[in-house]
Image 1 (cartoon, rainbow, N blue to C red):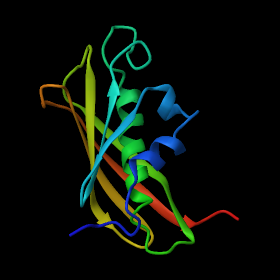
Image 2: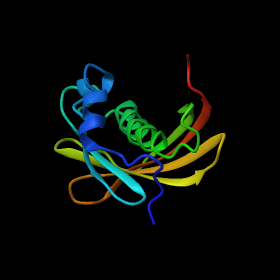
Image 3: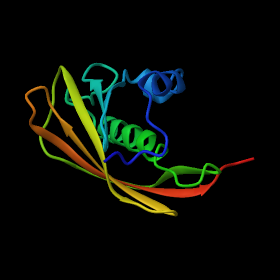
Length: 142
């Protein structure tokens, strides 16, 4: 059963992300399922640290992007917005090139908070980072 109150739309997410950190880092939205949003990010000069491996902050940016987009499609009140409250990440293995793929799945969808797990994998499907994102659900700014 789908968790969405507003069905995520890949074209809308891409359009909303133009001229933001999301587009600057090359993040692409790939797929929406009944309970997840999936995207990818290149491992290139924009996303690596000085040693040539994927920067942990880049991984966190991908995780928060996917979780935040998904969270805002699960709001119970149209007059609210979900914003990042806390995020953590455990970096499991390095990535030196290609793409990392992220999948965001809800662990808790409440009226004031949401908790999302975002798993990042390399092109071989091996876990590279696991992140937990807590979203605060608050009144939409006027």
